[in-house]
Length: 171
Image (cartoon, rainbow, N blue to C red; front, side, top):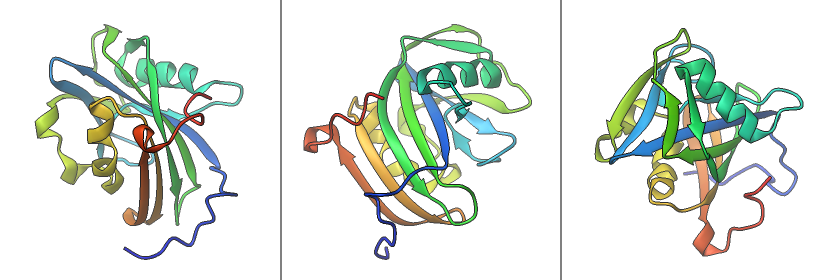
């Protein structure tokens, strides 16, 4: 893995975004993304934050639009900072929930996939997911910084809350 050429002390994500991972009974609700950034990949529901919208409002709206569900009491677990080569840099707020209203339903944007946590299809996901998602699913808050060239991860740094990461999580 090469050295990071990004000065994270001044980095600003051009595209604010969210992700949601609903977990219950040893399973996590994932989606197959049907369009937009990450089309064809497996991920959690989420998307771009609209102007004037908070990350929490966005993640609820995106779950409603993509899967026709409303997460109940979402908890912010971390942030992902992506320095990208071919799309705008992304600052992503990541949430979990254990309850929701509605029935996960396929839409033009996403197909819902309930997956046993031990069977998460890492090979169909973004490379960075394997470096923070398992810890998050165990309840750890985090900050992940990643450098991508196309869809290939070139550099990574993941800090867990118990290693001194705090404060920046609640925004």
